[in-house]
Image (cartoon, rainbow, N blue to C red):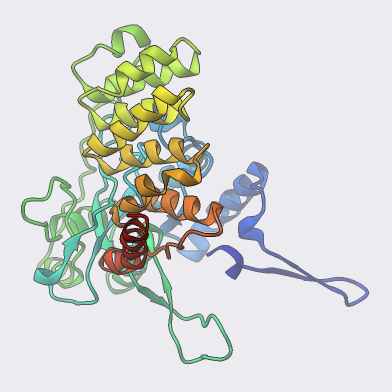
Amino acid sequence: MGSRLKYISVNQDLSIECRDIACEEPDDADGDRGIDYILERSREWNIKIMLSMGWHALDDVTLLKNTSRNQTVQALAPALKHGILVICANGNSSSINIMPPSEFLAVGGYNDHGFAKAELHSPHPDEPYGRNGDGHFRPDILAPRVYLPVPYCETFEQPEALSYFWGTSGASAIVAGMCAALLSRYPELQADTLRNVLVDCGVSFEGYDNQAPRVNAANVIKALDNGYSKSNALYRAAPIDVRNSFTAIVSGDPIERALGLTLLLEEQRCGRAELWAYTQDPSSVVRKIAAKALHKPDSADERTTFWTNLREEQEGGVRGWYAYGLLQEATENEVEHWIPWAADPNWSVRWCVSRYLEKFPGLPKLEMTYDPDEIPGKALPVLEWLEFDKKGNN
């Protein structure tokens, strides 16, 4: 929620301090104390759910590791031991590799286009999904992630206007609210049963590689009213254990290769030539790690290769890291290369186009949007400017 969250203090002299606590540097001790405070009162307050909207905020989002190495996962481990259902956002862009552990109820998103009818929904084009650093598929469930209304007005001039929340942070908040309502209606419901019924009663997209179904409250209530009682915890294979990076990097398992490449980078045993080789890996997870690790072109020839790889790359998340690398030392005479990417479905690619155009006063500006349906319309003025500019120079 960013600057919407305020911490207000009234001092002895009646002066007032107002802090944007969500924008401050995190203090691990504060987080630990907060979780301890909640758990100490969990029985008294009947706490059964914890919501984590930014579980990977302190981690490199491409380097793949076992989830047990994540600081937020470590911090929330006591909540799991207390039998609390930890619900978390799965991530907002395919540019990321890391995803939550299978012990959390991971919530992804889809585009409902503002309609309740399931047949009018569509997958979100920039949704992260797949196997996490343990080798487990994520997310568990999907919820709407576009134009989520919140009770907050942006300006006093239009107090009746709705404000909106976006992304899987919003989707996970919807699921957390649904879980709270279900626990009120079925107070004996246990965390594992609640998690199972949400997934089992979800509605999947046909022909979509993302296995997670859309959450469906009506189906859940019907199942619980009819005696649904599946309480066994989800079976999870043991996390992939990589100890030798050189063995892992040639594995037939793409997650093992990604874990191996991460280890090589952490150990500083991977040179630039090797990174370029890994940009051709069959797995987009490995390609993302390699493209981000290259950071930016270090020569004119490399810049040409960055552009070539950006054009040829089929996976949006990998394109995002090539675009970011090209942005670092971009020049105004590259405008014809940049503007055609204004309608790319990947947020990171469009963000790079937007930042590129902002660097040069004479160029048009790209208005960013979280709504996939609005991407073509936002890109159109920029694309038309390029066509007009080409005609003017001929």
